[in-house]
Amino acid sequence: MMSDMYDATVVGGGPAGMFAAFYCGLNKLKVQLIEALPQFGGQLTALYPEKKIWDVAGLPGVKSADLVKKLEDQLQLVPVDKFTGEKVTDVVKEDDGTFKIVSGNRVSHSKAVIIALGNGAFKARPLALPGADEMTGKQIRYFVRHKEEFAGKRVAVLGGGNSALDNAQMLAPVAKEVDVIHRRDNFRGHKLVVDELRSTENVNLITPYLPREITLNGDGSVQLTLRKMHSNDEEQTLTVDYIIVNYGFTANNAALRDWSLDLASERNQLTVNTSMATNISGVYAIGDGVHYEGRTPLIATGFGEAPIAATAITKLLYPERTVSGHSSSLDLKKPN
Image 1 (cartoon, rainbow, N blue to C red):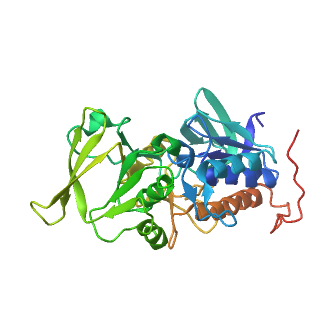
Image 2 (image 1 turned 60 degrees about the vertical axis):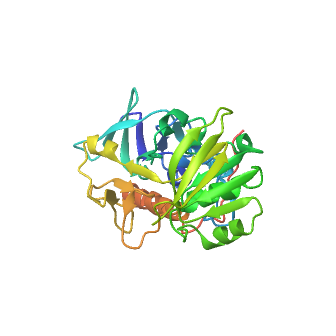
């Protein structure tokens, strides 16, 4: 047996992948966690470090960056080999049933694989107006990484989903004024957040309007012209310092198609059974990149799937082991 043979390889270092790696270590599996980005946390770290997360049990309203830090601290409690900035370019099933993992300039081997890639590569849907490209990264932003940057500024948030509402809620305490612009009267996000924003003094919900034109002013501000839906001539004009575009993302797992595995999928998501197993023996998948009846795309759901996959792998590889149904009696200590 090769010296670099792992029991389990977790591909994807977002929240679900981090928890899966922890649980594999908890089950005393030799495990490696591989993330393509320079840091763990997936979209939470890359896109929404300031965003509050509400679907994690016992941590209501935890900031994304704080949640990732807690997951990193948790990983320190068990042996996990961690690799960042390393994209997995191929997974090959060998004749003996193990897997060759090709990642970066490294080749490793694993008895089982957990795919935790979420929806794969993601790209924000752009603001399709003349002049938007020139302002992107300056007056036009697609993510809020540091809310202090918007302190005392006038901000327009475009969109009607949870991301738009969360950004408005996050910026309201620091911004001078926040205008949320949505093309429908009804928002798609949580009603409680909508109600809170309606009662926030420096927040304006402008509906049903759609951006029609943007003009860069000499002082660096932006004139934003809005057109009322189903109206030819009814318009509003705002002057803002920043525009936050929250029109959602396009995402795909095209990288998986380059792997030497014929993974079954539905709706561009990997098909799994109740053990989170794919159609290929030894390969499991968790998180928003998987499909089964009734799945809800929440971080909490991925957290629930992680121990299911880790336990299934433990039973597959070491059927003689007793896998505890709970971990409340453990006394884990962070190594020095």
